[in-house]
Length: 181
Image 1 (tube, rainbow, N blue to C red):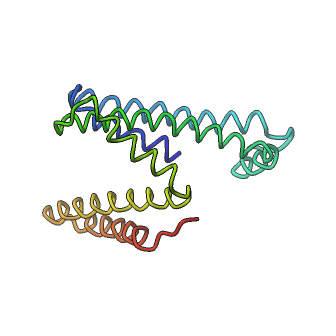
Image 2 (image 1 turned 120 degrees about the vertical axis):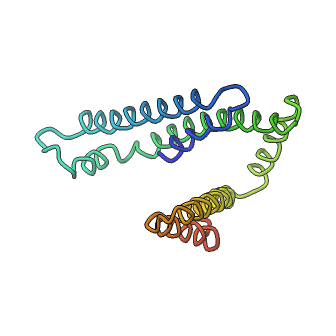
């Protein structure tokens, strides 16, 4: 689900070609579509794989998981590969646009992005690479929480300051103490 959500920010980085209104609209549409797809997927799984005569309640998903437990790792693998492929294509395209806006020629923008990414995949342990990526995301979200907290402080919204400080603290803990699995 995180991979689905992370693709929404791609619209923010395509400002080179599209205006703010269109980018906001595309992000809202993407969120709506993914919400419908996610809810429909869970509902379809429960309907298709729930054993007959079992009531559909909050525990039904566990019974379904027990029924399809042997195939679940393969389904998750296919879903993860598809999701990450989509995210990679969107991220590469949007980051390339971001580099072009910083006067990096389009011809080399993909090389600037992809060569380091390929080297990381080839020369690092997957769990270390995932840990590094998680820490980078935590650092980014920590920065965002600090900025949001400062803006909330400027507006004297102390509840928001407290909330953003809490989020920032969690991100700092992940950044400092996050370990590879």
